[in-house]
Image 1 (cartoon, rainbow, N blue to C red):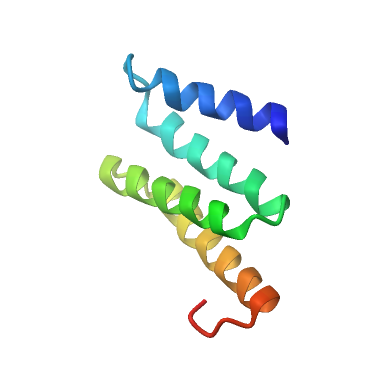
Image 2 (cartoon, rainbow, N blue to C red):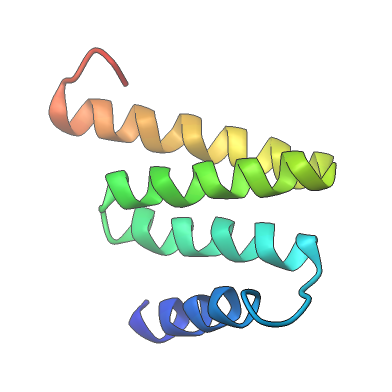
Length: 88
């Protein structure tokens, strides 16, 4: 996951200086969130999914917005199972 995460971060860094398609930005946040999810770092996964949701909503990307909502629900539920936190 480390190598993939490094490339995802590079895309996001590049997007600060050059124009990058919003779909790529949203996908990058979703993929980065998935890496964190599979590493069981649910807090970081949720943070990335929230960024994906914001980026996809702003750009009007319905498919990515739906994926972000689903992934957020899954990460919150999994974190709830792990921690027992009723807020998740």
